[in-house]
Image 1 (tube, rainbow, N blue to C red):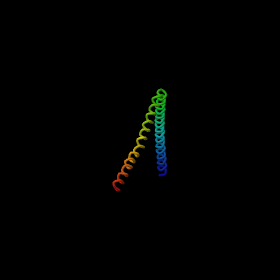
Image 2: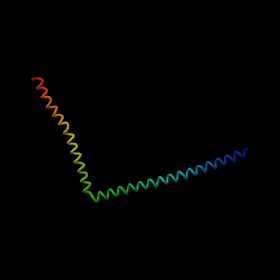
Image 3: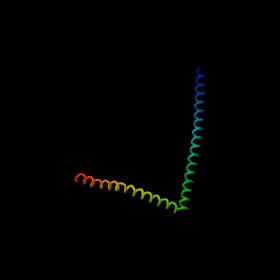
Image 4: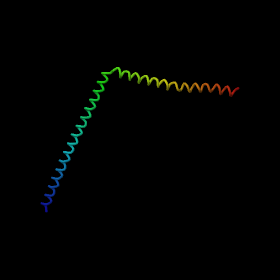
Length: 105
């Protein structure tokens, strides 16, 4: 009876060890896949950055023009927004004297 139990325990230990080794191999494989993916993404990012810098070096005037155009658009939009309250204030200021004039006369 004891021999059977010892044999069963050894078998269970052997199976558990085998399962752990298989899991370890899977983990190693997953880590390698992840490393390759991250490396590929880093290279892709570096290539895109290099391409962008190359284009910027080749056509600096184009980028400067885009920056100036964006700034001008921003300035124009800012001016338009600043003028809107003035128009409303002007209408209000005209309405008050007319109202007062009609009220008192």
